[in-house]
Length: 135
Image (tube, rainbow, N blue to C red; front, side, top):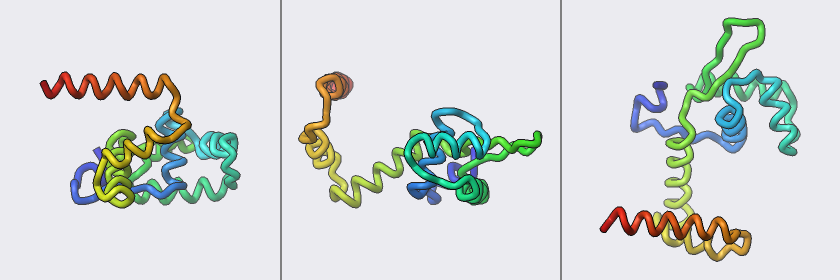
């Protein structure tokens, strides 16, 4: 476990750029800076290699990434877990944008015309499951 998870008062709140890097590592697993940079550029995020390197070095210092220096190419991996990090960011977002009301957020999301039928079906199934768990 890392320092961010060892101390409940410290919340992992990565910046947008840090989240982009973490997302690559969560999806692809341990990777070199070059692999992360190439993936970011493939996602239409024009980022210089040196910027990615510096960002990842700072993330190691912050305890967000681990760096394996056992070979010539340093391999980085996420030191913070995906779900708790996303959960903390979502909680902050709901508190800030929706005055702490998850239902207000859901109403906004469900009113979004981009929600597909399969996504709505998955939401219905989740709500049904939540109802049966409370019964």
